Image (cartoon, rainbow, N blue to C red; front, side, top):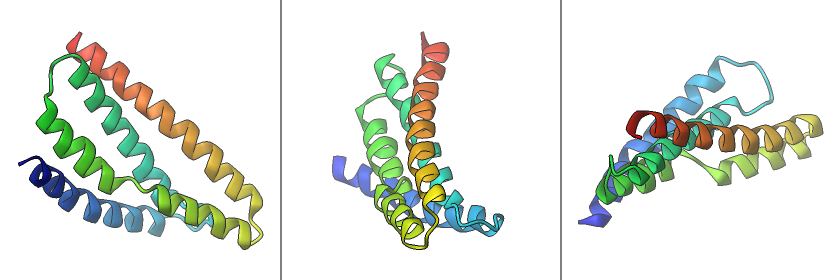
Length: 124
């Protein structure tokens, strides 16, 4: 049963990542990989909120598998983030590559902390 929850979550997360990435990137005429940035930060926020909800007893392990492992696992993408950062470096856009690395890590952590804080405020 647990594996099915992960599969169902991933079936939503993977196309959501692709469609969100394409929609965001189409609106920006920039070398910066805004689409990947947005899905990674959004996934971090969702995972932080879910983690806080589980800690507060407002969500259980099945929801954690469905949304945390399945949806967020397929929505976020460390491999694409790494590839795009490498591609920026190879294209001579070192400033964009550095900005992508620093901003992605900082914004992802901030979003995760914000999600946990929001969960604490909602279910404390």
